[in-house]
Length: 123
Image (cartoon, rainbow, N blue to C red; front, side, top):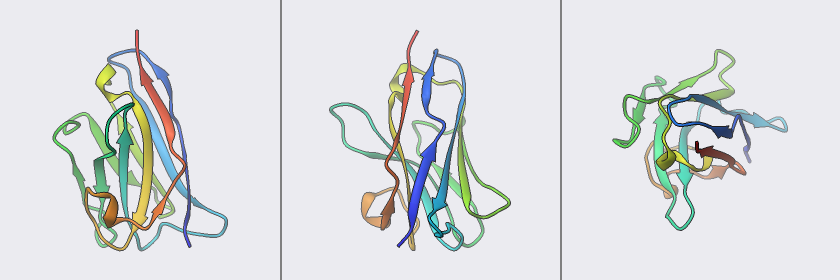
């Protein structure tokens, strides 16, 4: 069982940046797992934003965030970050990290989920 904790959400203005963090807690570790970031806006389905390979830490981003969001793994192997730049109101959502054995952009690719962190982009 992997326990995930996200942090770093908040309220920002359009054009600003935020960095989200996701870490394994309670003795669990993200090392060896593929990790994904997802988001769910009010009234919309959860969508994959970015994911990171467990093998070589190569990252992939959805078209909606490509060039603006960057995912990375910390040197401790237990923390994953989502650097979000040039935020706009359409990025407003609850952001979740997830871990599992398979890399992908769909919910079924991941077995473990964090509780989510709210990101609000508004002027």
